[in-house]
Length: 292
Length: 275
Ligand SMILES: Nc1ncnc2c1ncn2[C@@H]1O[C@H](COP(=O)(O)OP(=O)(O)O)[C@@H](O)[C@H]1O
Ligand SMILES: [Mg+2]
Image 1 (tube, rainbow over the protein chains, first blue to last red):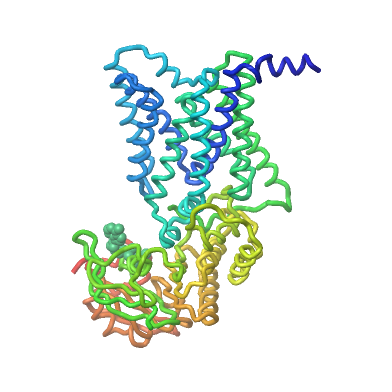
Image 2 (cartoon, chains in turn blue, red; image 1 turned 90 degrees about the horizontal axis):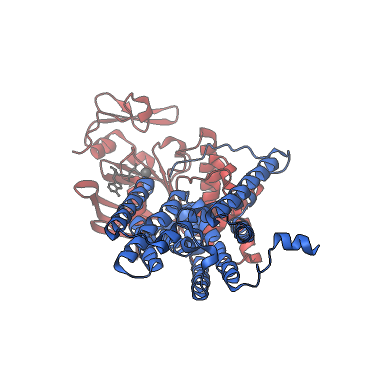
């Protein structure tokens, strides 16, 4: 028994301080990313979740150039991108605006790295993430900020849900669609700022997209979708820590791989449910579907 | 007191004048059909009533107050909504958003909340699919949900912007019957936007005809007449009644208005875009 336990959970997995930091930080960002991911899915804005962490990475390069904290530079860039996209958003052609924000950020990042002309290990660590290299103070910052952002989501939940499902009705009730656009893109930016240092800029968005997309197929209500999403995200990062601690596999790969697996399982479950006659065997009529 | 009053209302987007000198009073409890060709300014008029748009000049008064944002006295039914079959939102979740969806925080699932939502679902005949995912419902079923959603705050005015646009004729008639039943039970004032007056003939009290940026309000007999519409369009218009239906023809080519689909190029070319 003990040997099986030790094979799966290598010694020190729950006691070394750097692993404890990883458990706490990963748990916090998993909850946050899963909740933000629900709204990403709801609004069909996966491209935003993809673009922000990558564009924001350029901010880290800029920060390194002028000699300030790279995570600070990353966050500032993410927030500026979010404000720009949120304010310019319309009901269509959002992809173009997101793409413009992304190329602007990447262009600047290119410039910063070239002008800086240095190899900056901490900037490159941000590309791939360093789950097992989180300091105690970073862990506290990530945990506190995640809790605050989850609180913000709880407050904006209803108007954001309304504006994302029936925008015209929401506007008629006095909900500002622009304010909701900005709120949404800011949430993505802040979640990305916390996720990138841990999971890496290249694959941070997989934690925002994968679990939420899987939860989407399992649930019938928004609440259910968020709960499933949080559960799957937690499972994803926990499995990633256990495997990553033992092996030298990169954290981004592990998070992306496990969440993709969860997504495929969820779709399979959904497919089986639909095939079973009598229960939820609804044929989409689609005749009422209208492009926004 | 009038439910909705327009006083000398002008609306322009840049140099494009959309509504000019709109002047009418909708009495409380009236069922008004808002009729006009595409692009006439019907949605713009609805947005004025909702307070989503301010007139360039003139005033819009709703239930004695200047039109303002977010009134729970006004129920608004948008055309439709986009939803894929996998969207995790049941019919009752969508309708429930009509109760307090604009408020911060989240709603606790109380008995009273459920009872009120059920009552509205039942009123529109949607209780049978209350637990279904909205993305799997038909156009007519979605329209009923939007009506239930708008009714949850017990509004005194109901605005429907082209609710028939995506429906087949039969579901369209069902929706009109439902709205007219609700109107006669509750004495709610209804502004029902459509581009053809015919389906509404049996139920409406008044028609608000909008064309060329101007509008006339009155009974069907008063408004849908050759002289009145010719004046409104600023060119010869012929109104013909055939077997209880009203056909409106305009311009040299005599294209039936509200039937732009009969034209090879979509719009009556004979109508000047801007005088
Ligand atoms: N926000 C806007 N900016 C510029 N033009 C607009 C705007 N909203 C409406 N319009 C113009 O006003 C006219 C009336 O539009 P609308 O009220 O939507 O017509 P309807 O609902 O009767 O089809 C159209 O020519 C439209 O192009
Ligand atoms: Mg319109």
